[in-house]
Image 1 (cartoon, rainbow, N blue to C red):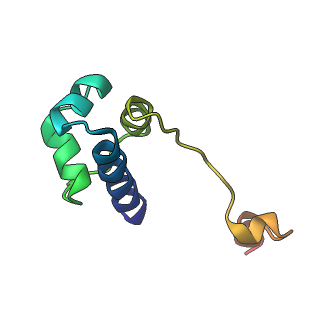
Image 2 (spheres, rainbow, N blue to C red; image 1 turned 180 degrees about the horizontal axis):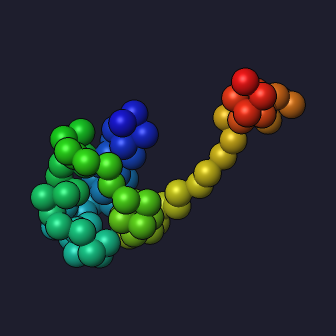
Length: 85
């Protein structure tokens, strides 16, 4: 859930920087205001789907990216270590 909390904090900061209300962000992203509120406050009971998170990020001019862990970029791959076990 750390990723969800990080996303929620970023959404709150970006929304505030843009001067938008939660209702406006909800309308732009197709989510409910309650979902935006819960995300910003770390109270989302279930994981937010990737599609919903991407729509929310896009509404705020952000994007979601997938990146390998730092150790993988240094020549080590945790996935290979796990598979080898």
